[in-house]
Image (cartoon, rainbow, N blue to C red):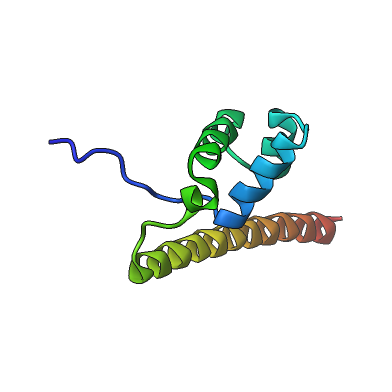
Length: 104
């Protein structure tokens, strides 16, 4: 039971426009995708095609306000979970170092 492709809008409109403009001004796709943390350079190719067809409207969100809030909150949760994981790892490292220093 396929529902078709959903427009997830993983990247904000501003980032898409920045990537498109940089590549259209001569920067290399790969460099731009790496600097802007875009998964693959082919994503920028797709955005350029869309931009050439409909301009900035190509990047307007099709999500409702509620869906957009949920998406933003999910991103924030993911970010906080990553920070927490890093904090736990740092605490483990510090505890090991402290244990090592007390044995000496």
